[in-house]
Amino acid sequence: MIEGRAQRLAFGEELVELIDRNPRVIVLDGDLANSTRADIVAEKCPDHFLEMGIAEQNMVGVAAGLASVGFIPFISTFAAFSAKRDLDQIRIVVAQPGLHVIVTGAYSGIQTGKTGKTHQSVEDITIFRAMPNMTVIVPADDIEVRKAMNALVMENDGPAYLRLTRDPYKQVFNEEYEFKIGKAIVFREGSDVALIGTGEQSIRCLEAADMLDAEGIHAYVLHLPTIKPLDEQAILEAAKRTHHVVTAEDHSIIGGLGGAVAEVLSEGYPTPLKRIGLRDVYGESAPNAQLMEKYCLTPKHITEAARSLIA
Image 1 (cartoon, rainbow, N blue to C red):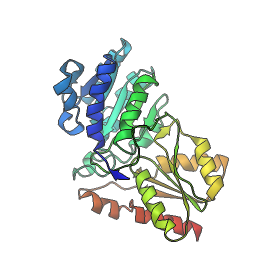
Image 2: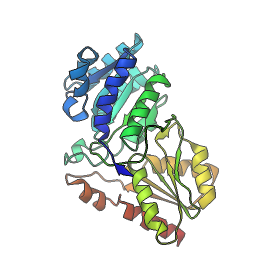
Image 3: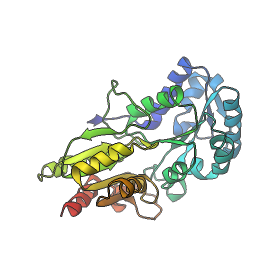
């Protein structure tokens, strides 16, 4: 693994590339362009950028109208706003008619630049996963962000939610990587325990696997960039190989990745499971490292969960 670039920077740059290849792509921003990096589009492709101001509900309505006449709108705002403030509009005018609108949730999870619980979203995966017609994508690094955006424009024709982080982390993919909506990625083979992650937490699962390997515990690491549609066969295969499963997400354990995996296992292959995530609490304002430690989201906590299962 090498040091990666911020997902939000990849988002802004890839939007420009997408617009160049497909002029139907258009970006609607909720007065956060310099944070989400949609400002890159405003600078380089101003005719494809609409500043909607602090009016998220109206922004969704405009996006729905544009989609209904053939445009492919990206809604650019924070996850805390896209999953709550404009949720009714997304449900009624985007998801129910199945329009091709891509809702982005920037600054997701608790690593949001010390903004605190008002601007952190730890329930957005649950909300959008439960919404009929909605595709939910949670990339691991900046390269996967770009690949996922292309897939959502070129291969998907319905509503989607794209969850993005604020700060740079490590990079696990290269330019040859082929992203497929609904397809899980096996990061590492192993037989003792399955570590299943989404987003950046999949990278922390890889780090945890290195720590466990030093102890003679061989972890199978599965990355789920698509939470919906879910690669259920990949989850069941991981469970059948290892008979122990740990999930990891920067999100509530209620209804997110951990809940989705638990549903699959309970119906298809009951398996001992531990969920790493926020345990029915809101976050707070602090540096990323302190938040990850306090809410038990680090590779160390993933290894502890794996050890306890095996024991």
